[in-house]
Image (tube, rainbow, N blue to C red):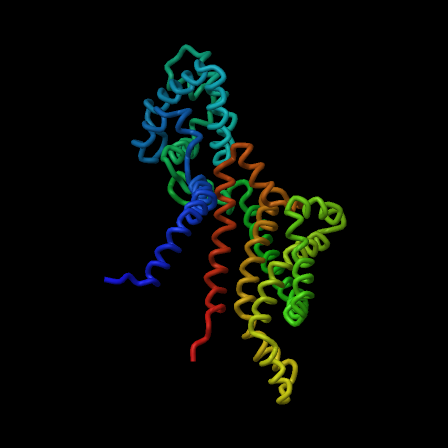
Length: 373
């Protein structure tokens, strides 16, 4: 029985491509997946207050928890004080996470640990005496929300919301600012995409209609902003940031221009100039040639370019608006958040960047499909 050469070729190609696919999964998909998991993971409070969180899982959220919760909190805090530097570090991380939800807890946790150790009354009373913040049910609810392995805290914080003890939602201290910054960043990303779309069309046509040698030279010149790297572009933009936001926006948009021009040029060059020239020779006005001939021929490049520019602009504008206003270096912002141990904030920011990009891809990719008769 003779084997099919085509089938053997397909199997060989699949085997050769398998290492590359595994490399992509290990080098790209897995880190992104881990970062997205960080956006919902709760890893700061549970190591510091394990017994308190176990007790709070039994609390119904009505009023204050019973004396067992107070006594267990005092015991956990005493254990942290006895653990020396490691305990102090764990308490600091827990306090910073809880303060992001309830600002009063940032100081209440270390103050309670110190105050409770100096009292001789019962542990439940000692916790209340140390800091009256523990007399508020909302603070205990914040502790309970941090008890699970995952929560929506960081995702809600990214849009300026937090959960209440009764299960509802309210503005965080930075709520209006966070949502305004997110909206402003999204708007600037959309505006940058349209700006690149308009500015890239003449350059794309120039590349598509040039001779092969000249087209190669023009493409290489168009790629120069990307070859310089994001860090170099950010350093070059720094003087423009002092001029004003409009200059910084134009610089960022021009830096993204190759991502729009090259896919459009590739689509136009692949389609060739014959059909537009024939339409013009038959008397079709230039605007109609553009609308009815050139745009449909370039639709795949336009869709790919819009997706590429929009996703890159999201990282440039949204991340900067949320974490470092005035800074165009999104990658540096994420790296700084990771180095500071703010993995939840970094993961939530990654979600804020990924979701709009997926929506844009879902809307634009159908435009790139071949029309059927």
